[in-house]
Length: 116
Image (cartoon, rainbow, N blue to C red):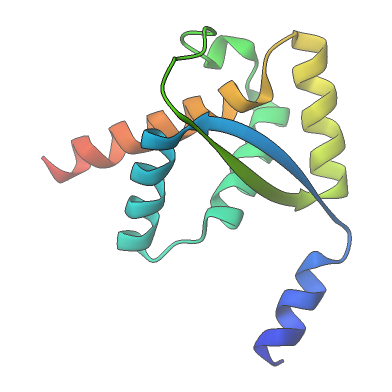
């Protein structure tokens, strides 16, 4: 299967949604993924699936938003994942951007500890 076909097939049955997170956190997260040879779409999709199945708003350590400069990020996930995630965070009355940002912060912390 050619690269273009993979991309095309991946986008079928997917939805995208925007989040707004700390630019500093996002850039660190992207750098780690680059070093590890990982794709943010796959990592974030897996996290969203895990959040829906196993986590709740207690996952977010601090629900207040920082005053750091924000970066808009577009996330692609399956239609089913998107609907379930949006429904869950709405019921929990928590900002979906903060949930994703918390995951990125945790990932960065894990990677930093791994390096030591």
